[in-house]
Image 1 (cartoon, rainbow, N blue to C red):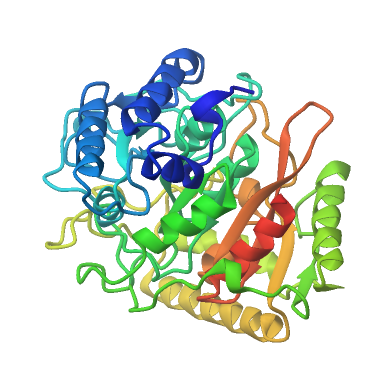
Image 2: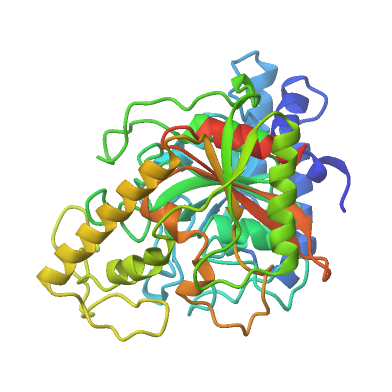
Length: 440
């Protein structure tokens, strides 16, 4: 494992910079050097601010020297998935026609990170294969996937090239890469963090699943970043005026958690089951009442998701009707591109609502749910990725609950195994508190 500044979590780097023990320039240059070392094998960083980031660091050091107030992430470097827009780097999103497209403004989450003092290092590889950037590789084994679609973000954080980053998640795109690469992440409650500046465009009515969230090697860093990026921006109509809670105020004693490892259609490895049980045992030792209980209707989550994927294409613009010329959306499981009829869409919404209601009834007596992220550790690149890959994650995409992921074990091949910690809506801080207990 690398030492020095690149091994420090973001919250520790912020303290070192504020206390003048190191400069922001020292920190940024250390991470740029680490990216130079590891990225040729990982292909994780696709756009680099090799000159802009050091310039920002010098300016941050000058502001600190003048005694100006320092934000919670003053001088701390971060990276961003190339589906989230920045005003100084292209946002290709893996699409050839967007290769040189530079947005006019930062996404809200990026702007808030910068306002908190964080320094953008670059953009990271989204997804798997595309026409613009080479495939990203897993830092634990380059023959294996780093997950998708926040693939490069997870890989570069795990490889110590970045301490903190922003990714996004619709069906598991924060959680699966975190599991594959052995880092921590939070899929926030839907409506807590604005999606403004995310591509593909999302809206609360047509896409009530996609969220922007933080990724890091430390759960404490997730909590800091969430506080920075959450809140109403008067652009994304899904966001509610609610500040995230503080994980440090959560008393684990007396909390109640459900744990399960079986999932219809999934065949978890022995190590995956053991990792989930070990995480539950850690929480039990900390005073959490852990109960074996499986949510109802889990077998419906994949068919509902496939129905969602089969809706007629929505608009690529939020200001004018620009539907895709394609007749429907690829389902990710090899199913044909046949869009649902109006009745099919109505039935899909009915089944989705029924699923959400049953999950609410299930979680009412619990504070959290503990379960695997995926049935196996990171698979080889050639392994097909489809809806079944995300079986454990899809239920909590459909209901918009907050989910933290934290490494819990290592497979016989030396690959990380993560667990999901699900909390009730708006209880993101509770999911983080439980994840931090497992991390410790």
